[in-house]
Length: 220
Image 1 (cartoon, helix red, strand yellow):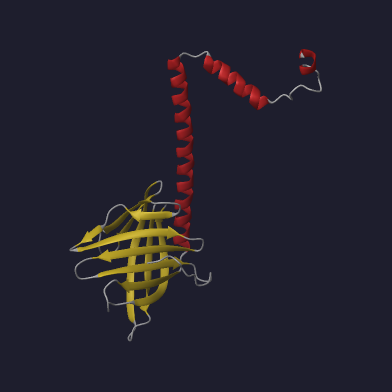
Image 2 (cartoon, rainbow, N blue to C red):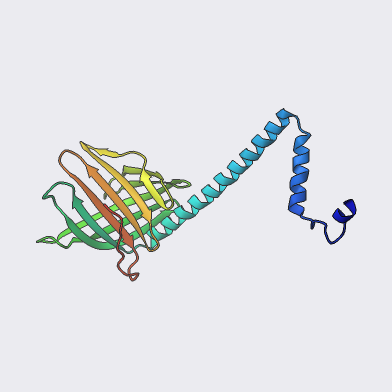
């Protein structure tokens, strides 16, 4: 039977991956139980390190894309929705001007008006966006002449191209929570306000003029 098994036409083709795996199994069999456990632990640590490096790279890419999208924004659309029956609901829009103060700090200025109320109301405001570490951001309220901006939120990654406040911002008896989503053509910032005197959701969409009006299917 051996002469048939060794016949050239019946031999199994050489497979480098199979040979490498077989050599590894033989080498592992010669190891002591301690060394086998050590080798297994080292392999798991290497795999974990590789996965973490991939996650950091993806997070850096998302954060950089968010940063560029904010810098390019020229228009903001705002939708305010009260969570109280009969509360104030309105939509507004305005212009956006972004100042790049450094590679880690942007000043986003916005001005416009609420347009679906009986008498349009003007609004104006500014916020500072700060890159702290890879993936971590902060938002501060900027007021004219104020040398110490108020920190509104510390944002941490909460999914692919999604950031959420680490903890609510407390102002008096009200609590503010924020989430940020990077879309293909816009940045969506959603504030949720809860308190004894007011409760509502404020959605701000920052986009570039000329890209068309986008709509979001996300529920409030």
